[in-house]
Each structure stands twice: as structure tokens, then as C-alpha cells.
Length: 203
Image (cartoon, rainbow, N blue to C red):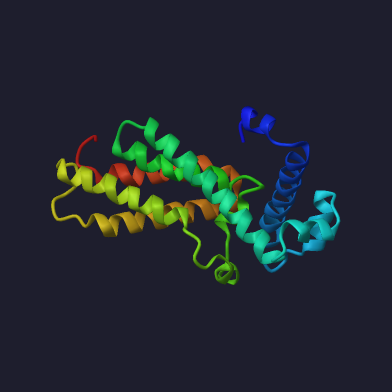
């Protein structure tokens, strides 16, 4: 929300949005600490300094509503950051590793740790939600297809298969950074090295 928009909102609406954000902040950190199965709205409300009734007033669907909103907020932030960094990159390896940076930076933070460690128990809750990883994989495929057309990938390379493999490497890097945040830069560099190893010459 920008300053101009904030000024246009009523005090009541600003307070509502602030309270909602406090709930999501608390839930995000708790998801990173104890996962979906360990998330209790009573504890979320205590950490946010709110009553349980206030949490339900903002999220009538309870825990699953909260988890979906936390996920969407983080996914949107990763997606926006990835596109921003990708636009600043000047070559294929830089563009693809920019997406890795956006993802790994988030999962190595307390509020984004859960994003790299989501287990199968949360999958039904996120059914139908567009995943940033799918968008990133499509961008990686585009970059690899462009490199292939420019003769920068070995002829006959399957850009679809390579994009899927690199997407998996990015997710695995995010998972490691979530467990050991100090490895974030190493994982980002590793993804870039993988891409550079595929290229026959600088992009």
C-alpha cells in the first residue's frame, strides 16, 4: 500500500488492514517454526496480541483461511521480487539465478521459512492456488528456449526437461536455506553454476 492510498483510507480501514497484517505476520513465523500441523489460532492470536475472536472476524474460515492468505502473500512477494531481479539481469544465467535469489531469500527469512518447508499436509489447503514455482518454471523454459535458438545450448537439448530440473534445484535450494539460512548465498550461486554449465557460450 503506498502513502497516497493509505491517506485515502479511513482510520477504521487502516486499523483493519494493520490488524490483518499482524495476524498474517504471526502465522507466517509460527508456520516456519511448527508447520501446518502445529499451527493453532489461539497461539496466533496471542503472538499477534489479539483475541481469538478478532482472528476469526478477519478469517471466518479459521486456520485454513489464514494459511492460504499467508501463502498467497509470500508467493506474491517472491513473484514480484523475482520479476524485478530478472529484469535487471543481462544474461541467461543471471535471469534464472535471479528467480532462485527471490525464492531462497524468502525461505531463509523467519517469515518465509515455511514457504520452503511445506509438507503434504498443507497441499489440500492450497488446492487451486496458483503457485509461483509454476510461473518461474515457465520463465526458465522461456530463457532456455531463447538460449537454444541462439545456439547457446547443445542442439537437441530438451528445454522443458531442463526447466523442470532447474525448478527442482531452486526448490531444493530454498528448502536447504529454510533449514540453514546461512547457506542462502551458496545455494543461489550453485543454481547459477548449474545454468552456466548448460550454456555453450555466454548468453
